[in-house]
Length: 474
Image (cartoon, rainbow, N blue to C red):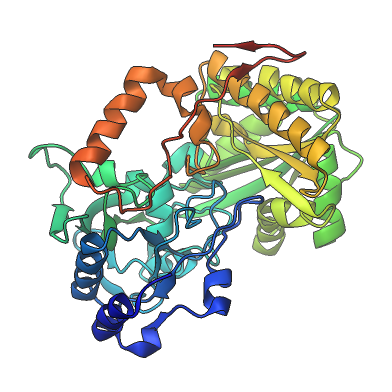
């Protein structure tokens, strides 16, 4: 708990109305969207300017109080859980789109702007902001930046880091730095823009961002391909990419997920199919038409039961929205839902899907799989109950085996969710000991007192490598 002197220092910065340490507020900000992680902060503060952020940081540094920057709390790696107490910093009072620069194709925003509002504003100007995490209706841009969020359009357009041109951030010493800018080229020193993007608030507090916009695509088409099984769908994905087609969206859903989504959305999805590919292409009309025809043919050659082209924008939007609702639909099935994001090279997609199915059976847990097939980003999702300790142990072992397999196949433990606290024990599997130590050195240099989101990314202990069927390896 904070003593009265510290509370007075903080309320002097923001006023009493924007600082709270009531039990209700501490409980509300004690967790995010990650099951199984909860810890109450000592207080919650809502700055309204970069100057207030600086002052808050200075108070917290003086008293060695952790500061946890937080958007809407939609992240899935326990990245905003205040596991060591401290102050949760919420940016609801810094939520303005400051500028749309059509000459330089940029948008400058404050950290608390909702992602969907950025998308809508860009489109209103005839432009396009491509990153589209499934949580875009409620997630904030600084949350996207901290976790380097991806989305359905990641295959063709990339992820959040590809659209962050510059940042304003407050460091752990209270100083403000500005990185990048409205530039197509900039090689002046270390790339701190990229370093802060995906750093999960452990190196600095983002207070402003310059985002890259692109011209809005002329047209778009959407299709749904049905398959008997996931392997046929995965093989089709590899064949599409091998044919030098890069779709705007190339998503897959397995049969249990499909059934859950249809029960939730009720839009007439073909629940009899073993797997479904959602394919979307945008751009010039002639190119879109040619690519869609080629993708339909490739799917049929790899065993598709049928391929259906959306007949209008409403049907296309319904199909895309159905895919975005996969987590929500699955979460209705059991009390606890664990959504992961192991990623492998596209050529290993079918092998990884098969391994996930085998792993679920071996550990006697229910795992449904959907995700961004085009970039190899799988979302194995386990429906369980956190109160069943024996089952939760099997779930943890199953996911450890899945992470180990992903790394063995040349992949990674996370493609877009971040490391946070939940995946920190597995980081060394991907980076090796030397890689983790190098990252710790950067953290120590920029935050020597360890007040910025402590306990994230770096684990106290590294997990042993789990292999299917039992046993471990180093």
